[in-house]
Image (cartoon, rainbow, N blue to C red; front, top):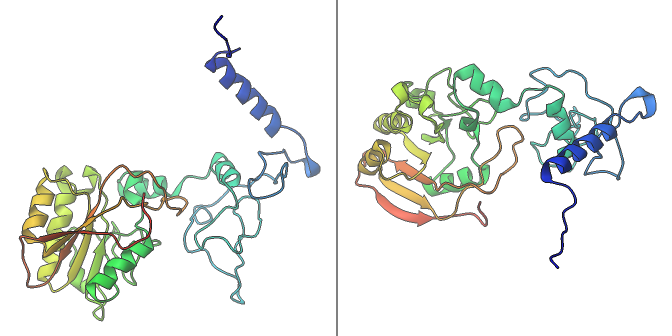
Length: 289
């Protein structure tokens, strides 16, 4: 006789789980607060007081200040637990606090930036800083300009945001003259380009910056059937085909997310040099997506 393991269907199981979760989050605890899902980073069964309303500034995950004496005075934006010893861009002490913070009504950073500049939330994924540093090493020094930044996530001392519209701005004027190199991880969606041209307008901007005297590193997908890729092959001095997939940083948490399903390439533009580009496989880091 065939064994029958299932006792309830998937829909009933999901409803039962939601009922249990609702009962757990409504249990009374000390001080009149309600108990929450236990903190994965603390003792089992530990609960935190509910978070109050958060301002836009409080929801920013980057650039959190340390205490006046130089020690790490950061605390979890939901429960107030110390964040000493955690990543520099950590803003919550656990996944449970991060999820509860979002449920409290705080708008994720990427959605706020997308609404502000008419882009998509996925346009704000960040490049791992160690990859940027490795590219800078290949080019002979640090970057003097981040040409596609939200301001708080820039990888150089100077940057351009969508307010300055880097597709039409003069990159050489915005760049630090002591470091005439520009990094650009542009938004990939078509809405980021004039008339839906997408990345083509960014490659054209990189070519103009090269003609102004800058070395430019442009991170793009190697899509060989597109106009932007054909233009890059014709104008770039070199193309670095990344041998592994990049674990980009989540725009809301700042944490690397593996599982990227797309390949990446870096177009290198050098003053006085024009393609066809020299293409080589390259990967300077120990890991990838």
